[in-house]
Amino acid sequence: MSYSSRLLSVSTTALLLAACFSVTLQAEEAGVFPIPEDAKTYKQLMEFVQEVGSLEPEGDGEQDLLAHRRKMARTVLAVTEQAKAMEIADDDEMECHYYHLLALNILQDLDEPQAKEKFVEAIDAARAHSNPDVAAVGIKFLVESGFRKWQNMDEQGKAKWLDSIADYVQGVKVSDEHQHLVITIVGFLSEAGEIQLAKQLLQEVSPVFRSSPDEQVQSMAAMLEGISRRLDLLGKKIELTGSLLDGSELDWASYRGKVVLVDFWATWCGPCRAEVPNMLDMYRAYHDKGFEVLGISLDSKAEEAEAYIEQTEIPWPTMLSKDESQRGWQHPMAVHYGVTGIPLAILVDREGTVVSMSARGEELGNQLRRILGEPVARTKTVKDALVQQVSNPASPE
Image (cartoon, rainbow, N blue to C red; front, side):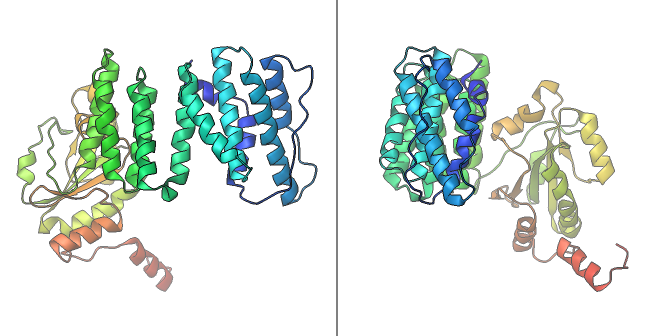
């Protein structure tokens, strides 16, 4: 079982303790629950932790709840410190360090004296542990801590945090779990507007995946390199190749001189389906002025895409790989541009340059109006429909 699977299988005590994360109020000193003297083994200590996790607060006020949570965290910290002094199995080491870090994290949120310093030290100790699963736990808390504190970190702190993650990935035998870790961090950095840091991390770790003797891991490098390519798309040309749903080959050059919405989607994607009415509206309004849409379906079955396109009367062409092994997230264009989430709506101007990476909803209309001017015919927006319903409830659509 992988370390991520084992983390998911730890007891519900972790969930009970995690409720403390959002607490920032002060509370009176709480002490600890007495550890039974006959708890001599790791298993017995963890059974006691389970018991502590099921205890109810002595009062029902906010201060009573806060004091109880502090006492729980202190107790778990004391138990894990005792357990860490034992010789325990590798799997138990991972669980022990997880609870230890969780308790410290809670206590630092509760402004426990020295908890912040101890939490940082415990993360460093876990990351340096000879047990790779323990090191992974350390990285997990390092990453989550960085996410939570990002807005208050200076540039030096951000760089140090990023270097620690890159060093970790470069020093392990990488797998899909590490790819997921990198993608998660890159996604966070992108949302935070830290595109250069995201690209830097990808540049540093992609060679590790590429040099792996495992072909499956090597394919992960292609996705990571694709993400870097996607992050660099705004203001640059986008190139597309592949098969259309009708079996013909895409002639991307024929779109030059048109404003094109490149839409990565799938029939199983709720937000994708929700955006279709807006796209149809914009298509009808701007098609005669040079607006085109090119869909790239990440469906695994052609018939599902065809049925949905027929049902919704989508008039634009859709790409779908002829090779069934290159469908879904393995579509060549999805891999080439590192698509990890849909819908992804990329707007391209007449010269083939990407002008928006999020051309959905109002953003699509605003961009089209900026590039192509006013629509040929006024489109009916959601706002228009609501106004009509209010002014004339009985009026048909």
